[in-house]
Length: 141
Image (cartoon, rainbow, N blue to C red; front, side):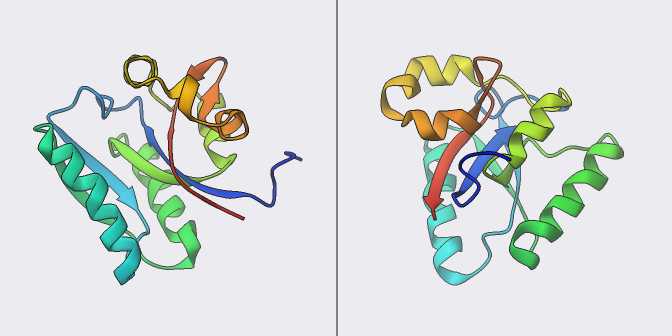
């Protein structure tokens, strides 16, 4: 069991099956933030990418607190059609990293100083084998 079991965190991870979000012209983002406030928060991320010339292809999957999205993700990865980035909860992302399914975000993490600004408790599930494999965007307990 992971020691932060009670902590939930939304993370976006770049999947290896496609180009990492940090280098893509367009990113397809699988997520479950579909309610009004969640969608508004997601739009902040979308607008930031668009201001950098990166297009956002939205793939919302409503329902189940993310379980429906994870079912969709498993099906897409199995079919060889993984999205560029996906919202995940906490330590679930490490399971995908152990399978070699995630891209490396070290370049953008170094450029933006993530080691200095992301708390160590969050780095515990945003890094795998010393490499950044996800970007924390929301944390609550």
